[in-house]
Every structure is written in structure tokens, then in C-alpha cells.
Amino acid sequence: ADRALPAFYSEHVKKMITHLQAAGVHFHFGEALSQVTKTATGLMATTASGLKIESDDIIAATGRIPNIEHLGLTKVGIKTDRHGIIVDDHLRTSIPNIYASGDVISKTLPKLTPTATFESNYIAGQLLGSTAAIDYPVIPAVVFTLPRIAQVGVSVEAAQHDTEHFHVQALPYGKLLAFQYQNEVDADLQLVFDQENYFVGASIYGNGAPDLINLLTMIIADHVSATTLSQKIFAFPSASVGIIDMLTPLLHHD
Image 1 (cartoon, helix red, strand yellow):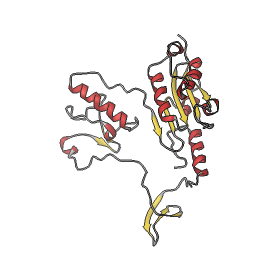
Image 2: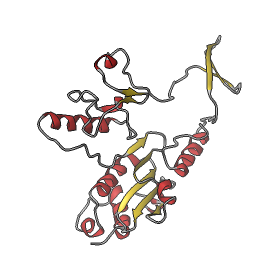
Image 3: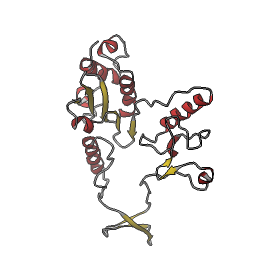
Image 4: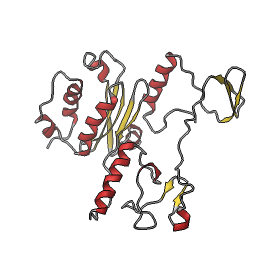
């Protein structure tokens, strides 16, 4: 590909790439691996353009395919595609009494461990008598690079392309909360709001992103207003309380 992590906010990805390059990591974009061969001292990766890189180890990290071969699915009539097992809005396969959950499902939602857990718990409810279709909440995603990158809800790029319905507020919390975030001055938070100033999305760059995105996910999922948030008392001087203090005035007021 011509860039890393295309599903994440491009400016945060660029910052992460620059940070890793400064630490000695080399990136080669737009290269398709054609072969790997043994050498006298290790391994040689060769790309379609002729680029050769010698290394002690090579990691194959070019995505995943569903492990559905040799299960006899076609024999019983369970439909699949290149992305996995096809299910309906009750996670039923084409055989109604057979369900599927997790990464093996053909879906556009993030294939993450907590998503699989949510789906499995939903199926348990179906088996116990629930009849409602599955209703996914907003799903946060984290890339455990150094620094971390996280996002949830409406993406920054989507909001920037639809200014009629959304607006983005930048929050350079690393500079504003240097003490709380241990002088990580380039840590950054991009907040997405809808027309009524409800909080609907976020992208975070910084080592505190994994925990911070969980807090923001709850605020988004519950449609929390400034009025509701201002009635809560949080631990001080924790790192997250500074974010809450800066976020509250930006939210919808009841």
C-alpha cells in the first residue's frame, strides 16, 4: 500500500511513522513482496519492483483469511465468501440453527476480540429465548504501536468530508496536560461532534490512548451531554479528568 494503517486518521499515522523513523525503523511503501529466499546469513526479501532487503527474520503480517476449509460447510449448505461465513442480523448462517461469531464472520465491522465476545454473548441470549436482532454499539480500535493510536465512532476524515453534519475539534492534550501525560507533548486528540454537539467520534495519538479511548467510547455510546457529565465527580489529578474537563464545555447541553 502507499501508506500505513489506512483505516486510521492519516495525520496521526504520519506522526507515528515519523516517530518510528526517528527510532531507526525504515519503511518502504508501494512494494509487493514477490519472494523470500535463504542466504548464507539469514533471509532475503525481494519485491516485485526489485527491491531486496536482507534480514534475520521476516514477519508475514499482510492480513488474515478465515480458517473455514475442511469443515464440510458446503456439504451442509452453509454459504461463505472470501471474507468468511455469511450470517444474517441474528448471526444465523444459511442453516438457521447454526450460528457463527467472531473473526470467521464475513463483516465490515472490526474483527477484534471484544467484538467476538459481544457476538458470542448475543448468541447465548438467542439460545435462551431472545429474539431481537443484534445491535452493535460503537467499537473502539487500538493500534499498539509506539506511541499508540486509537479511534472510535465517526472518523475524522469522514467528518471532514461531511461538514454539513459534523465538525472536528482538535485537542492537543499532550501540551495542555503535560504533567498528567508525563510530558508527552505531541499527544493529540481529535474530537468529532454532530450538528447538536453530541460527541460521536474520536481519534487519539499517544501512549495513553488505549485507556482514554474506553472512557470516550462510553461517553459516545451513552450520548452523554454536558449537563450529565458535569454532575459527575472524577478522581483528581488523574490523567483522564483533564480530558473530561476540556470535553464537557464542547458537548450538547440539555
